[in-house]
Image (cartoon, rainbow, N blue to C red):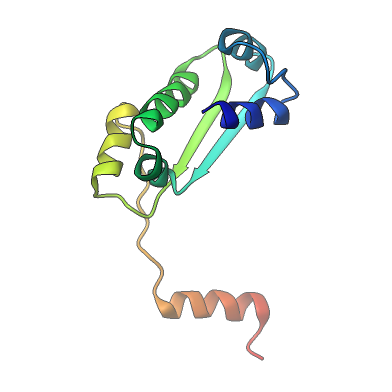
Length: 116
């Protein structure tokens, strides 16, 4: 958790050695949209500490004084980690997209790279 806070602080030019309360006070002056790709992996790899870290992020996103938003991306929508994310995130708004098929990926590549 400390490593991620330091990375966020550095990107926002906030003193990364400050206490969490100081960090949050300084965050009120900044705008941040955090995109977490493979958010479910945080729970698979880090167990209980992930609950604490994710809960902090959700609290920030719900705090109307902070200009903070979070987007979580996951390939798993029906496993235990997805359920945990829903519980900690107070049933966040979900958009579920169907998986790409091989033909879809090939069409995207052909469109971007050409058929040659």
